[in-house]
Image: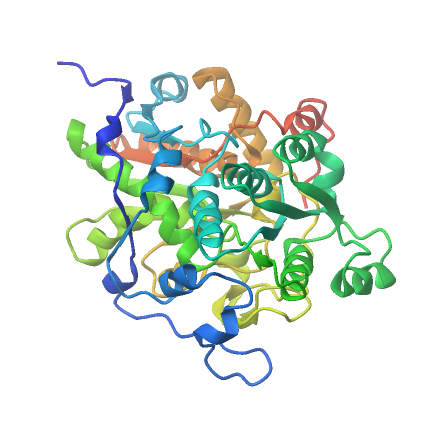
Length: 435
């Protein structure tokens, strides 16, 4: 029987628990530190920003964390997501490699981000919070949280990095359709935003600045908590629904991956996709290569330093052990706004530091070249962020062609590019700049 091009799971096969990689890691991550005292941060310090359920998940050493029923009910709007073989891309490349992609673009927000936005909204609602503040880069995370807040009847305030606010107006529109209030960051509404504008009135903004504004917003209001779309342990935990489904789908058709590929900014897409299979590699049951792909404009894993650093520019977040370019680093305004972050998840960073994963960086002209080739062969227009993964996948497939190696390459297509047409317009007209 021929292998199906699209591999699906039934609704009853949706994971009922998230997977925590920490118990599987050879070296356990170091604690977060208070930015002033440099002492380990306890639950009380995080309570003004997060509900206790998420704080518990942030420091959990349990391998499995149950998914609440209301969260599962919402997941079922789009999950499980398909695993698709890229046969037409394989033929176009003339490669003996087999290429598969897990497609997360079918969610209401068009990306993987609702996988964590939904439980974050749920837990905050449970704790009596009525309003959430957050930042967003390209807009995928802001869209996801706006959707989740609408589901659980919460107010939502989004500080959107100005480069994306100006360049992706329809992302703003979808957030506002779901009831969110969206403003460009840096903004005059917070001390952090005003400080940046005093130095540069035309600042394109950064995720570090927008995080400072959203954290300040939450810290100064009793009805508000802060919600983060990447980096933190509980965010990556929620995203493991992707990798757990992937593992079941690969087992369903008897496919063993040789290479796993995903883009990385803060790390939620990469960790959620790779961690369930990476844990088996750490246990010696797999030899799969795991590749993280980032932009040369923000080359955190490839050129950053592993050290304690702030998660934001204004110094309102804990110090985290991670690969970083410096909290004051402002990347150029590339179209992959979701990857314009100065640091990476502490979990992903530690795994990279100990060489359990690989990292590679590309300029945006190369990633859009790959994105257009993928769209013309597979028919899906990818967001600029997963186009980084596609670039690496194509290069791996061409390596297999040179070597005559029939490897299996699997990547995460974490979102569609329907709101990123200005980026494609710039590329197709020859106006896309590499930085």
